[in-house]
Length: 264
Length: 109
Length: 209
Image 1 (cartoon, chains in turn green, orange, red):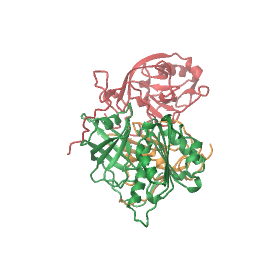
Image 2: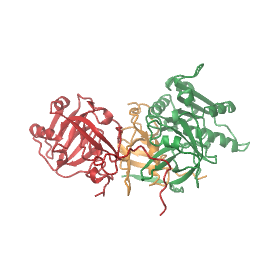
Image 3: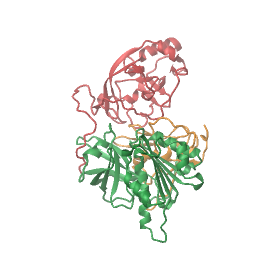
């Protein structure tokens, strides 16, 4: 027998609604950001996602989930989509859709893989490929919350990001991450480029492993809030390794994107 | 397996089976669950009826089958929950969960 | 009632039919072979694998992998239809017909027929069928696909193959056929899906005629 115990919820159910594409922004050769205007949008939390539903003229429908890339503080909602070569939905979203088009979606969804500045830090984020998207929302929220806070209360949450990509040109938000690191001394970004590192690259050149995590992560004694997102094998191996290194399993949150990395 | 039978509230435990890239996690069930439940369930602490392991639902393993979503315990692989959508109905089987504890929702901003 | 929203320019991955008569209603043809699983892929080593047919009285016929290989095998070329709307034409399998299996079962274990069967699989999946739907050249225990041993993610070492019904009835990782006096709905049949599953009558969900 199952019993569910809930405190009185005041949230409304999540309905399908029609968003309008305000702008499309290419990020890398295979990823594009859709900037959306969504009527009656309930402000989301960093880490949450939306479900997108496409309907063809004959009524055929299919759904996919996409992490929200934008901070809750932003006026528009942004999704960053990776085009999967054999995908059914991602080629449509990245190649066909343009400003002025409408998109049916529902959200925001998710209460597990979320971070607010009120949770505190330090923050440790680990991304594989397009797994960077929800973590970028967390970093953008962190920055926006800092700016909006009063001088007395503002405080930079220390944050570290470890981000694995195949090639230099596959690093999504590359310039923004470089700028963030330059302007904010409390953020450290470590990239590992696993297939084709650029010439003169002195950073990591291999898949994330135990030694890399031991070097880059906060020590377990700092009790960081950890978020790991990307392809399923990467997420599981990183999460298991962090726990082996002594991190509190309750503080290691995971979001699996499927074998190739696209959220199925 | 080291740590496999701990029964406390945890996310991934060292030594739990890491195989099979075909599965996702409980986050994928969130959308369909939102059609049945008003509060978000991915943060709900779910206890497996078979082995007693407790995890947040987002940390459970999910097989997004196409016919439905089958959510399994990462500790013992037993089915904790199944969800299926037919044209007229949403089906939910939670007999694999002996207890579900849903946190109060944060007030909307 | 408001009109449903249509996504401009979206067509999906489907291909036009051009295949009149061969494609059941509501289906589209795919060249892929999607992998859909309700659980982790089991990996039973062949030296511990066995297959059993069991009847109501508990009489059991059992084959080890080697004994199973010694049964007469056939090559089958057939179309398959998944309830999630994809169909695949001309798939090639090799396996033992359930007719040959049940004949041998009667010899080995004195197994007696009943009106229904329940296929039981590694990982806990099950599906039910009338025994008439697995006899008369309509069903096999398949061990090869496309000329090679059946891959684990597609149900290897052995899966049930019942191509005239929706493909959820072709249970992966099958280990036992239980001959039953009463029909017992399996994993999906007890959870929203049709008990029989004829693609030509589009019997996808419980309540479909």
